[in-house]
Image 1 (tube, rainbow, N blue to C red):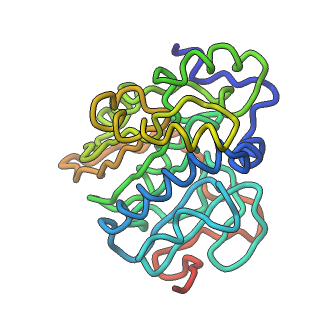
Image 2: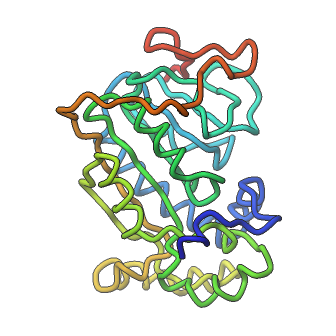
Length: 258
């Protein structure tokens, strides 16, 4: 399990996830996630919301937030207002400057998920919110995942990060989980008609079988530390960023107007 967290199939990339999300099954999963995020975003306040990792460049989850200044970071993006082209291991964002961070299926496709979480911890203000969406490796979809992972198919090739493991990581980093929910309880059938016929399973699963969800969502907040941490010497220096990509501050982060 530990080794699997850091091992990806050679063809497993976030770009492939975009194609899967356009399938009937992927669209239905996105719809369920969108309804949940719309509900959750009503509890997110502040000046700056940062989404790390793109799902759908036409309709990103951060657009559902009422936070006025919203920024999307992804290595596959072009430059523009509200968009930053960057990798995930050394975010070009000022320390303690962001009110909320959204990771929509970003951790399980990251080469170094621990480093990504450390960067999230760095950029979040004390009491800042973290929202994570992940595929559940041990839910109802587990048999399909174990079979299709070998072929490098999406989304089965993503790293296995269980809800319990993520909670452990967050606890060790000083976060406190305040909400969690399982999403999507139908088998991963490809035909839209069959998925529609099984829609009754959503109510049954959410009420009686939440651990079997295909996707789980966690919202946590960064606790205020009473200690003064000593920064490790190997922390990546911001000066190593690409030329022209300045480190935004709370005053000059690019934003998207409502």
